[in-house]
Length: 469
Image (cartoon, rainbow, N blue to C red):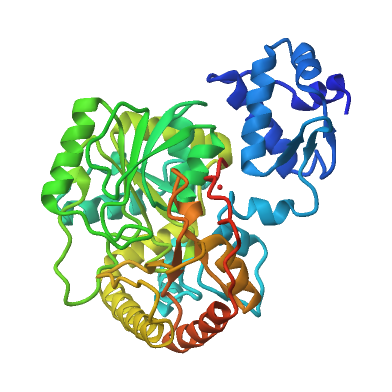
């Protein structure tokens, strides 16, 4: 490809703020992922592309090297830089969350334990829609474009925070299309290319995707983060942490919030799993926002009700909510109003639904843990007290290559490397226990067969963290 041709395709790649090499790599990444730059395409030499773009050669070299580390390009001395070829999908599986790939390319013959979400709506969803039909039929003088969300739902969410010890004005609530959109909006509002984001290692892969989508640079700390160091943003899952199931103590929460306040770092508390504690366990401490009203909270009904409802929210200071609403208006003008009305009705009945769902989750958890102990006693499988995932350490090999073997045996699991922005957790896998006990028992039998046939590679599969899921 000629430099001038690639320069034309890149467009206004340098219009944003941040290091030039990250901006260039980000635009090239988009062209590759969208298929505009096809496998095998020979990219211009470093020096010639730098001349065409009027940048230093080091900018192009750094961008190419970053894409090479992600597996998107192959650089060889004497033969130049090419878009990764036929094995690109396998390479990129380590840099894109398999949970997302499973959503895009579902396989009916595969038991999907990589994505932790309910497989069907509970009857309460149908009841909620039946309940709101008269109200919907009576709607008049409302065009339905509400970037901040329907007032009834914003009020219901605020009331729920108040019941949990966090006084909240409905104006502090922005309704979103699930927790993932909440993360994406926050990333776009608060981050610029090259900004540093503090995350736990391991953490929710969807958060890493959202941060890397805006070319921010994740920097890791332990589960719970501990002391917050200078950064543009900090992200933590304080309750039923994804993937480890950890619940931060009240003391750890207070220290984390105080540390973030002292460092002047905005702190996101992802509460999507917060109400999924098992029956009989101690209730978790209050949300982080109870210790400081400036903490940004994310919630969703996707895990406790159903992902297809697509209802989530952000709780934050009013000025940030206004900023997010402007972004939401540009993106899609607002969410589905009937779904929001149904969600507002369900929030009033959520405690009984939650109690039933958490009992089911505990039953499934107990079956999965018992079956793994029986069929795979050499695996290190810590039990959890809530949430929906197990964080398992393999006795040898690596999670990425074993996940590929497990997929050939009909089970999709998540390799640990994709959840660790530091490139660690190579010997871990994440397995969800949302499925019914019978399905989990069958999945465990398949995993045991996969493990018996598994031969670790001579070298562990690359743990290069994803730079865009």
